[in-house]
Image (cartoon, rainbow, N blue to C red; front, side, top):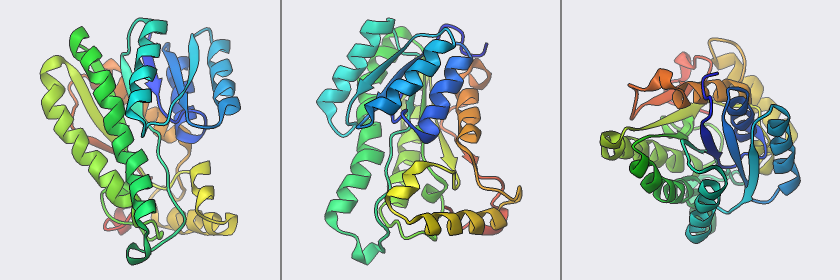
Length: 260
């Protein structure tokens, strides 16, 4: 088991990529704190799945934009499990489609608030504990949209994910001396519910078909593809890797200037 007796905190773990990461980590021996924002029932489903594997699990509600609540969440995890070995900053949002010049300040603030500020809050709350223990793995879920741009009209999303990549590299530099690895994953288009919040079902399917044609492997990603990458970065197999961005996109070689 690659994460035997580890403790992982996964934000946004009630669905999609976060759910796949949480259950994959548990399957490999980790106890898991399942963070969610609104969907308690879905989070409890994930926790019950983990418990059925013989691992421990708790569900914790927290809006990652709320610094005080994030601090409480981290404290609750440490109280329950005694430590945090792995932090996965997965909580993220998109918004209704909009071009940059049509993007409202509300949209801009909310998207960057969850995707960037939320990541910052979780790291600020968790890193001191990891520093004290002299060990930690921090995995930030960015996006291919943070490396290039996107043909989807999500003007705030790409900049928020680009900033997460920069934050990852800065933190890797600052935290390396404490034996803390900080890396990011940049998924391409993945079949998750997050897209349904800003696009119609037809638009989502059309995007899937377009992206599948552009990928060397001829398909879009599944949550498990990202979870497998996260498992590698959480395990001891990646002990000499930090400050890196692991792209999980099926081989978008013919569209490198763009992303999801």
